[in-house]
Length: 400
Image: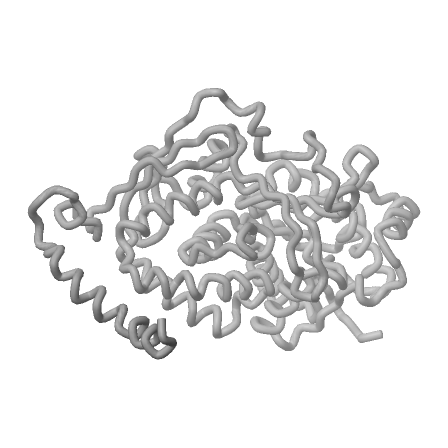
């Protein structure tokens, strides 16, 4: 067993980290500091400090990181239009590097020599947390209880919790686990481990079902500056408040539910159900403004790099040099992305119905079917002939 003087634990108050807190105290016989990041969990954080103290924490730190989360992590990722495996808006993935960063800062502040997390040995989060630890504070020791202890699974964790008087949030009425922040809420485990089973209707937190959503559509207008949303319906908001506002609008109309089987970094497939109402709206609006303002080749280059960028976020390489280089390219490309998108929200759907930009590359005088403009249609003859040349040569060689 390593000699440890003080540990800072990334603590949520859920089953795993509550059990881990008690286990760390018993195993390492040293002070344990519980750290929780407020990323928009809402009422879930209300009793975290008291619960951590009751479970044995020597100190508790809860930091409000909502604005930093959206401004410095969500917005840069959305400037890249990042989407993992064509469906996942990376709500859990993008939160981990910030939580781990803040946890490291607390560890250095309180003189801890070790950090710990509640991620299992089968998932992505262990990688995301530990890559961040090592990128930002390589001298800190890392304790990963799920890879060290003899508790084989959730059932044994529940038994451990009951033995030590720790409340267990996973019940027969809620047989799955969830993780929430301002961008989304995710559900996995329990009954959701059967990919054929439909999620229970009462599971969802942020969104109404499309069937129960209003029968009348709602229109929303979003303004962007250099790739970032800055106003909704003409009213400016801070990053966190803007995302919260769109979460409310999207949730009311049943927008942002995703049910998918994804490929984890460690090689396993897992089933996850997500609610990302505001993020779904922003991505559609952002793409609409880009369609007017981004050069074709720049957009296509960005789109070719997006799967790689999304992988880097999903795998946990937020602080890696390749992600940082990609971000600089993306941010440079986003400088002209200033404009406005109008969207219709209805029964789980987001439809772009208008877009405008002060420096739009869309020129009605050029694309019109009416006479006039600088475009000479006859010029297309030579354009087509030159682009067809290799096809003609090939056809002749093959005797067609």
